Image (cartoon, rainbow, N blue to C red; front, side):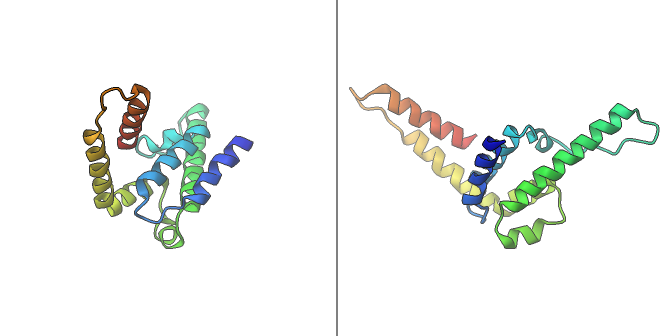
Length: 144
């Protein structure tokens, strides 16, 4: 679990303040992926199983809700206090949707800036290929 603790320290150093939403969200996805909980961000919240559901269905739901609660806690712990207060009654999915709404203009501008740098990138004659390719891949990953 030492790896999990060291990865979570990334979030301590890079708390969400607003303009850094894209970087923060990338870090959240890395942490949750490492902890095998990133799947909770992939879709709507599971519906609670009915009373006549199998024990397996009830267990799947219980595990999912535990993972969703943990993802929500990680997100809230890595936010500035004013954002924590705004989102404390939401689950991880609702938090992400709300933050995307709040900071969409900033993300659009940041995507534009990254795209501009990507398209301006030129490789000059007799310059090494490797640094150019790595820089281009870096831009593409940031855009993703």
